[in-house]
Image 1 (cartoon, rainbow, N blue to C red):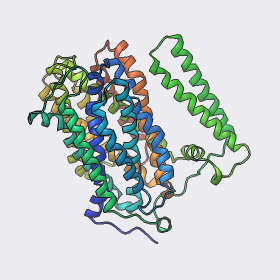
Image 2: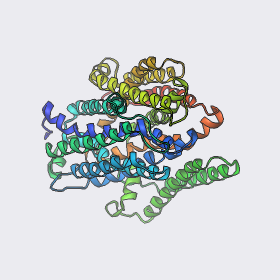
Image 3: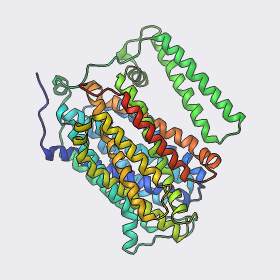
Image 4: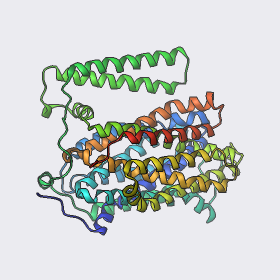
Length: 496
């Protein structure tokens, strides 16, 4: 049988090096955007809806990029054109973000920046599967996790490091401190240069050669064929969306909760559109991109369906942590809520150190995860890691000494490393090779949907359930990681 040749360590290194820049940008975003929003006048309960750009762009961009990258071939190859285009746009957004003059402009820039990150990031998961034989894929994903950890460590700590070098860590009202601005400028340079390294030092198999390899699972049904089931689903989801919208209006809930209603209604309408196309037995090859993506969604492997719940609860917890760690730590451990105060900015810089710490732990854990998976199996290893993350996240609500929060980050870092690699190892053998890009994009739905839910309801929960105490969101995130650990036991391991 014709199988892909194995690649050397340095070839895999070059393939994954661009992820260093992507994660550098993501880490700057995760650790500093809430700070920028508060600096520009956002209240704590407004922060989730301002973050809505990040998951929403991922939901829209990743499956589309995956779908088209499966069908692309240029002088640069199949996935690399998207790496390069996303890197250029991301670099420009990173240069603009810390100079946003008003809150709405910052929110718009976040939208553009996150969309650009996703254009580059989505093809990377498929790139590993394209280039590596099945036996080396875990090594490829572990290498990506290593670069994610290293990039995030440096990026998260950069404002703190710049403060130690004498850059101003406070600024006039409505202005972002020098430490944050120059960190974003450095991130722009790192992202562009690292991506250029990967684009210039890797090659891709032509489509004909890639198709000739015996690799991956059998082709999934590209478009759903049960029209009656689609019509029932369309009606149920559309009615749920309309009912949710009426409930939001009737109960006078915060406007961002309308996002849930809109999402339910949109999914119902998409199913109705697919069912309408199916009425006459429309040919698969003539279906528009949205219909093919919806068909692939309905035809996805059972393992992906079960992993969806694992990803849902894992990423709900992560989004809660990214949004609320800065206001939680600055208010509880540093006793400050004024973004212009020295204490607040010292605490915000310390959150950058904490985020760098958990990413550093993740980089180290990436080397150990394959051994742990062999000893315990993929499912039990992931469960253990998620529960360690739950313990670490919950401990933040109990600790008063900010230095001791570094211990909390050990558990969070182990869970982060596991989330970035073991679900893909569980899924890898179940994906058809020719649809690797689109299925990696669809898999992102189960990362994005919980983030959209978090952006819709966390502000409401913090205000009404936790009485404006952001630590409540971190406790809820810990519970979510615990549930994710239980859900992974339902997933069948490859070869078992």
